[in-house]
Length: 94
Image (cartoon, rainbow, N blue to C red; front, side):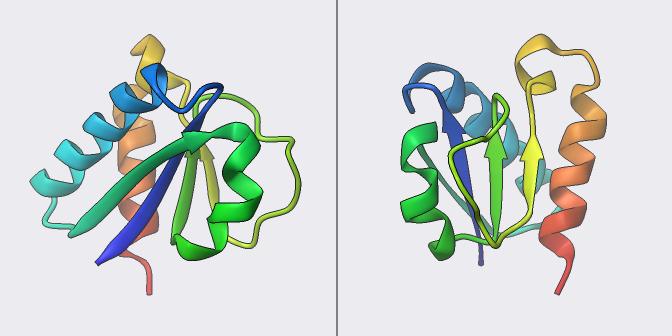
């Protein structure tokens, strides 16, 4: 099972929207996934436990060793499908 960390400013509102869309897209594509949410400020201390970091803004909080995908499109709707495909493809690796 793949683990995804979704980070936004406060770890509540926008990350909930993004996390839901990721879960649904992964389910449609047969990718077993666990999605958790956090604040951008918490990313550096949590990222090592995950396979992928998805943010709703530019992550500048430090260094992480996992792939990072910026997913503002999942809030605006512009380019949403392409971003979800990118997330699924990244999770299918390995």
